[in-house]
Image 1 (cartoon, rainbow, N blue to C red):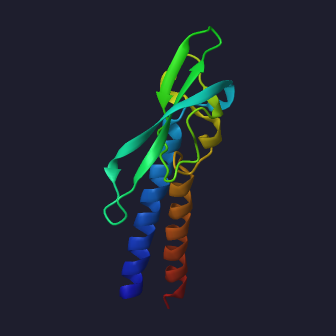
Image 2: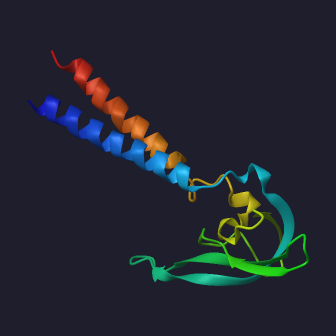
Length: 139
């Protein structure tokens, strides 16, 4: 009975992760047509959320860049880390999707698991695999 319960729960959790991966992947636009532009880190912004035990806050770079039309833009990266791999004044590459400022990001973070859907996919496959393995062990 316990094996059946573990199989069902692991399968449902895995399916939930797979559906979430699919939803997250569908929300992101196709960035293959994005323009790579030169940018500069102008500030490091501390996250409002503080880790309870360590007391540290993730740091997000604030970046300015110039569009091909010459317009100066500024954005704060949605990826925060501690310690920050960026310093104020550091030159960075920005991935800018024309006409969609919401998807401007640092090119180095474009494939980051922090921002994407791949980790949901991996956990989904893992939990579905556990459910299938337990199901195979049931006599």
